[in-house]
Image 1 (cartoon, helix red, strand yellow):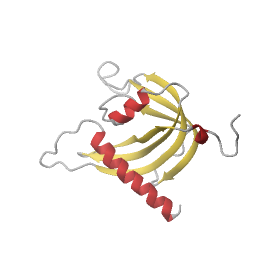
Image 2 (image 1 turned 45 degrees about the vertical axis):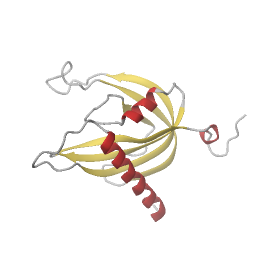
Image 3 (image 1 turned 120 degrees about the horizontal axis):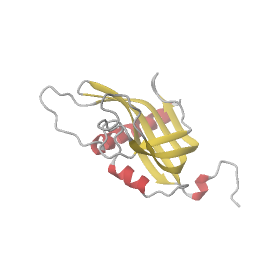
Image 4 (image 1 turned 90 degrees about the vertical axis):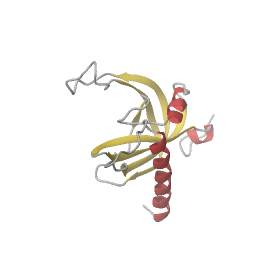
Length: 171
């Protein structure tokens, strides 16, 4: 990866982290002995994708609280990747390029917090809408607990001239 692309990805990531850390799940003030979250970028994706709708993912029965008190069931927005505009993997455990990407639609979720603006933008989509979607695969450590998160950094409608594959002509 050349230096120019790496610097661009780093600035987008830093801006995205600042936005998502402020707009993610509701945060409580740090108490004595707490440390701020440490965020490690594992992968960055920027794609043109087709919105395929919102579907319900049921609980997978992984804890003793399942299925009634666990909160594992959720609605997710499904995006089919049409083509990649940018991708970077920065760690051994970073996600590979995806064919489908799911966005957790649960507000104030601890596992994959999304900003209210992102959730509102997704709720305004119709099946088949084309969007430019960017997300970061992060490894977040906060209060001694570490977990992966996939946070949407940006979502925007795609103009018709960008929707086409390179070299094709719209009829």
